[in-house]
Length: 400
Ligand SMILES: Nc1ncnc2c1ncn2[C@@H]1O[C@H](COP(=O)(O)OP(=O)(O)O)[C@@H](O)[C@H]1O
Ligand code: SF4
Ligand SMILES: [Mg+2]
Image 1 (cartoon, rainbow, N blue to C red):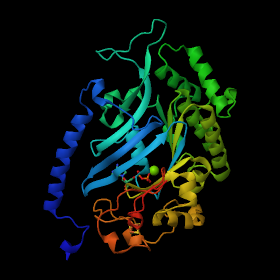
Image 2 (cartoon, rainbow, N blue to C red):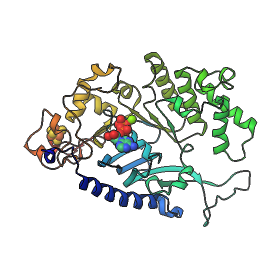
Image 3 (cartoon, rainbow, N blue to C red):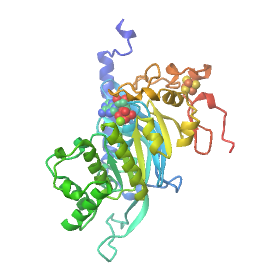
Image 4 (tube, helix red, strand yellow):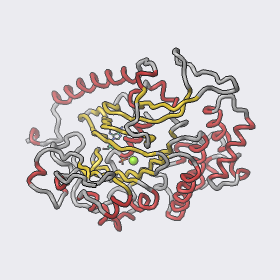
């Protein structure tokens, strides 16, 4: 019978979903496009050691089938001068989290619904009217301040996007404009982010950035994107990200589209750059090998939630969550080239529209107990830096 099929929606149900969606989308779009004074989106960091603190982030998609809770209460921090790796199966919400940080979630369907994204910015000091204050020389007075990106009106996001936080995407060809030369696109970054920059200044900066990513500027500055190999294009994207001197670089599967030797070169480059710039990297990947090589801290996501986080040593030497343990066991199967089934843990992620109330991993978990049919497990702290959401550790508190 159709009614027993959970995937079947009646006309009445479809209309009810559409009505509820329309109401929420309208409310959230109005919030996103509101006018707000700076103090309304200023915040405080929980720890002065962090550059980014994501707390209880909820990012949903209002689809015709229902609400997809792509990011459903995610919290993690990015400390200063650290590499944080986010890992998890395809579709678990890694990219939606990072796109939320950049405020690139496409409305009205996609919306940040709740939570905070605190970012320590170095930005213009502003007067009561919100205008930058000249410093008497050629520039403006600057100060450190914490923005809650989730609460920023969308038209204020230029304060940080591309400038304080830069993003490197998986497929560089789609991020580069095919009709402009590499030099023109690189210069543009300087023009946007450095008021009063001249053509000569921009070109000098572009060439410096190209050298930094291992490219001889003379060969590439005047070239068009299609004239470069995939690896070269990714280097250019990294140069573009660096040109704005960001405090945080988000690299979302930066090596996935490249072949193995080039992958290794790009990872070496990122590692090298991390040591040269005074910034942090948020590295998103489904590849545990990349994380092991690059990250200081690891966040493991599953079905829109963080299920474990800790230092790279804790996650690799002492994984706690059955999913994290499974990921590591299944590592040799990761070389499949279609990218769809990366990990060999039996079973599937639950339907994101109808998430159960209990642990989302239960149907795939070999360790599950009676307790696992109850409430969704809370985060348990097992060391000062190690957290896990699994009932096996309830009552196991940090003693050190
Ligand atoms: N525009 C969209 N509309 C509906 N669902 C989306 C959209 N974008 C992403 N999702 C859903 O959000 C979830 C998380 O996606 P994503 O963050 O891209 O995963 P990944 O961890 O592979 O980066 C997936 O279930 C995906 O289907
Ligand atoms: S809470 Fe239970 S079902 Fe979930 S991962 Fe832990 S043991 Fe497995
Ligand atoms: Mg992704």
